[in-house]
Image (cartoon, rainbow, N blue to C red; front, side, top):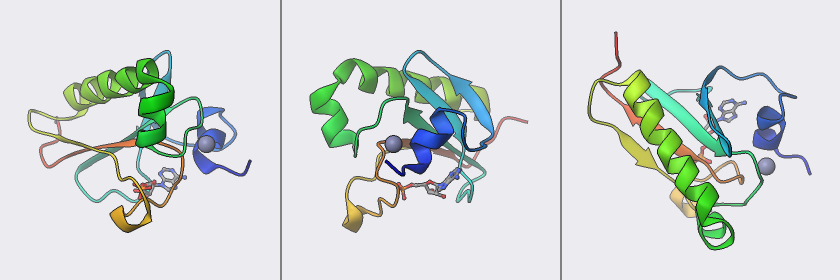
Length: 107
Ligand code: AMP
Ligand code: ZN
């Protein structure tokens, strides 16, 4: 399968990693739309968060916990955790992932 996030999680494509956990990795978005813009990506391939939630809630919980840790590491306080799900919602990479964004980066 030709999936860019599978390649990044396996180390076959470069990324700037921020943190990792048993089931997920976090790396900087290649075209950040906020001062903090990190993607949290499960190591196993699911098309989107809806599929992940049904198939593997333990991995979904790990993705969210890693997202919160990334927010604590990179941002001073407020942050967004967002899953774009489906074409019309703006999903462009069909491997489930959370965006962590913040306007208040840690110095
Ligand atoms: P979405 O539109 O929710 O599917 O988010 C996909 C995100 O992946 C976009 O914000 C892209 O900028 C980001 N992206 C695409 N390719 C890469 C890459 N090679 N490394 C890091 N981020 C990427
Ligand atoms: Zn994948």
